[in-house]
Length: 260
Image (tube, rainbow, N blue to C red; front, side, top):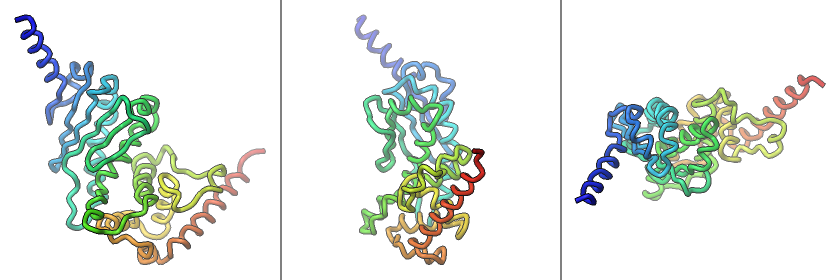
């Protein structure tokens, strides 16, 4: 009888650690103590599960930092990256994994986060790195490949995600700035924040909808390098050279202005 009672008690405790859709996760302290699977319901029928069952020490952090970003930015990303005939994923899961290496990765609608790295960046890049993965979920470029579309260049896929992160979500951090140290290695196809910097420059100087037009083409599997000239009036290689020249002038002016 004692074993039956103990089993029932454990079952109730496990259920308490689950936060139901629509429930405010911060009002469930039992879940924070044992890890949780908080389901965040958003307008438009979107549901995002934040799973810390493997990393209970991160539950409070996700509720205070990740969930507010999720509520505000996931619907916003859906609108920013909209394209004709496309419906963004309605349900996705963010799982924090204790034994995972690296930073974070996305497979379809499943985002995996490396808990060890996240713990080191709770007050730094942790939330921004998951924002980057939300972009990948909304991009959904895999559907075009499955239908036989062109494979998109990885540098542009990652660069677009970092453009949205560094220039729309957290521009104040200036995380994609390129200074004297990074200038020599700066290439438009350098991927991640380097390409994000290039995309921002081209967007500001040539076409404000450039990232979103490129996104639509990649999602449909019809991206080609010629699109850059169609949208901006300049070939990609020429844009890359102009951007690099602009960076060189900027760095030179900053060097001159520094006190000796």
